Length: 318
Picture (cartoon, helix red, strand yellow):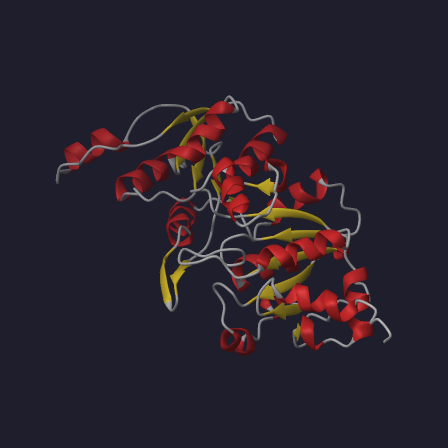
């Protein structure tokens, strides 16, 4: 059931600083927990978003529990905690929901006990190995331009029962071919992490994300993939269970991407807030017409929460 602060699926998103005082009060009282993206919200590849630490601190003072939910598996939890500390944000490892953690959680939930072929970063693989899972990967060597050499590197009889694909900066067509062959087995699952089709890396500069490569395996194999990154509903189910969320509409999802963060929030029936500090511009937001990609609210950045709470504070009489 939607609460009074939520807009309808087709309503125009509202800027949090354009709400009147009573609307601000209803909004801040309408959620208890925050799920926040990191990249594009707190920092980008080029810079740290100004004054975001004060924005999150204001939410915490208002009693909001904050968990950082990221699709970025390139950075470890430990390095992310250190990066937060550089911004004077004291964030514990338990507050960071890392993509590899999602995979471990899911595999344990289904009592998976098989061989995994994985396309991901070394850091991602390390988390799964530390959790006790048996992985194979590669090939890593150069393949000669011959079908014979290709065949030697993609055909084998190992009993792979899950193919995992996430971000891999050293992805090759040979790895995809090998993954596709494993997926021919009827009992082999396809597990997908990040599905971003484009990744914003600088102002007006996007690069191809991991999504299109995962889509190749989905199309070629005919498998129904299990999406464990945003906007996959499976991730939302894990978070809801982990945090004992009984009313999803009392969760606020904050992010900078319509197709990942806002869609994720909408699928999970969370409230949604888009910040314009990362991968989406105001023009792109205003041009969006798909209801499942429209946020309930938006802000220029998380720093807007500083002014938001200042306007809620009672004014002293002179």
